[in-house]
Amino acid sequence: MKKLALVVAILFVAGLALAQAGEAVAAGKDHDVTAEVVAVDLTANTVTIKAEKGENKTVPVKGKAIEDLKTVKAGDKVVLTCHDNEKGEHEAVVGIHKA
Image 1 (cartoon, rainbow, N blue to C red):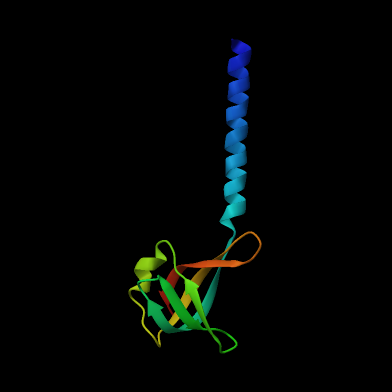
Image 2 (cartoon, helix red, strand yellow):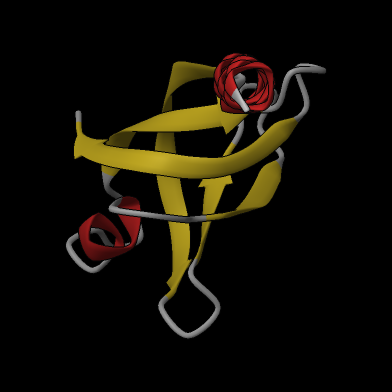
């Protein structure tokens, strides 16, 4: 019985360690981008910005940034906190602050 309890405890600890490692990988990386707002779509939770090279990009807004999305309008200069996955691919805007 003691051996079974020990095996269960070891598996539990190993599972916790793997879960934390998975969260670290899934967490990816955040970075800030300064941009000008072109349009806001509160229904789709997206913001269209004028990108560095002058082209417009529409990006999804998630989490707490959805509330911040309600405070910006076309023409505003903003700092967007963007979240990338572990591969460096853009996933969403997770923070919006007026520049």
